[in-house]
Picture 1 (spheres, protein in one colour):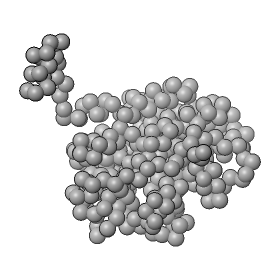
Picture 2: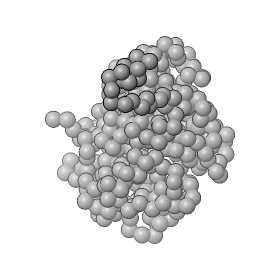
Picture 3: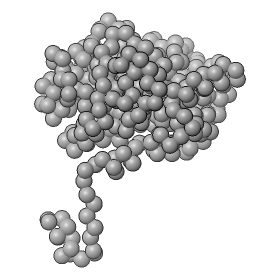
Picture 4: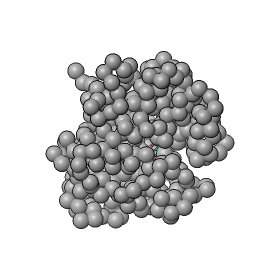
Length: 331
Ligand code: AN7
């Protein structure tokens, strides 16, 4: 039987046998070779397919731990601020646990699929007329004053769960890659990977990629009004600072090029934030690495609107007649 990541990695995680575990069988995601990307980058590039997690993003790794820990502490409700994926994941795990969930999202700035997930799982969805950074500040204050467990990546259990992705990469490759490329918003995920690799006694170089309009870690200062098409990483004040990270920024144009390249050439439909890491690799290269792992943090279907606006294809209308169909198909 397949097991969730708390069962699989219990000796590395702060859970005891007998603790109630809330799992949707997250983790154990595929590591896929990317031949065309490898050719362009000039190194062996592998994709860590985190979109294969139950709610379609890497957030499930942290959420199984955060929600299980919240239950153990007797919480009856969880809350998070989110650009979308954390909200979807928190809502799903809270539903599974039978507790209430509130998600605070920047109004109009999260992908529709993620909003649909949060609503379907029965979360209380609050659309804040402000950005993610404001939402996080306010949610932290609220969680300090009321008996609601905060499940953002300021929560240690989130990082504990997310570090397991590094264990899987080392397991699958037989060793750590030379470089790990990952999109960065709050810098929770890159911090978690670094911990995971460190616990395995390895130290790959960490390449973090931010979108040009939302690149506080590259600029070295907070960004008050972050803007990018990659809405998942529209974050101006990262909750986690990081060591051992090299951060660069990528323009929305390059992110959209990478987004299409991955879908058209590699058959991999990821969400725009994930393609920020691919765009960065294409622009800055492998940095002397032989093996690179690029983390595909979320699934393309989450954000159909961006896909429909940037696919570059056409839909050919057709009358239900054979001649018209031949014309439409063969041109
Ligand atoms: C697809 O869901 O912050 O650097 O609230 O959804 O750990 O923040 C999402 C972030 C990368 C950045 N890729 O990770 C949220 C949220 C995708 C994401 C990131 C996010 P962090």
